[in-house]
Length: 225
Image (cartoon, rainbow, N blue to C red):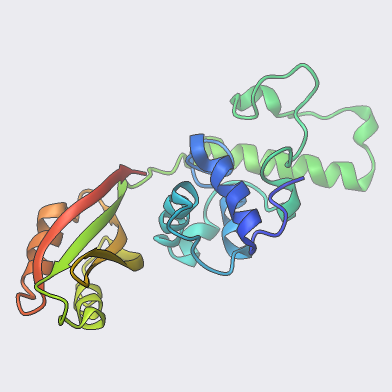
């Protein structure tokens, strides 16, 4: 079944529901399953799909070369998601139960070329999982509320100024204008940060330095990835 048309609102809603209690498409670390779904999307999900947006911003914070190094073997998009993916062995536990799901030796019935290729792919995925054990960088998704002085403040310049803040470990995400009162709107903008490199104090100090535009900055949400 999978997610259906992942570019559509309905497909992205299914992705959002699927990620409500998951960090990744498969297992507990980024894998080629995340790459397949990420590359199939046309852009970031809308802000109301918070779980899908959290996941999208997290995956997009890695470059293409880093994503290619993740474990796993790419499968068709339809194999991922609700009631998708390769079926678990009968009577088995969750797919993430490590070694028991891997048939290292196969059987006599797997002598044909297709089965042999499948076995080699499983062995390669198993070896990568056991030998690499990549150390994941601790990251967080932060949503900031940036408030202007009045309703005459050019909010496009506010956003331009905020996005001009560039440093190692900081990736800006989606943004929107949210009405406050008396015609004043605040800029709500998300970002993904590496915890060891970028903190909220740095972000607040850097943004409020644009004192001609910015009155104050508040942290609207802070989620560990």
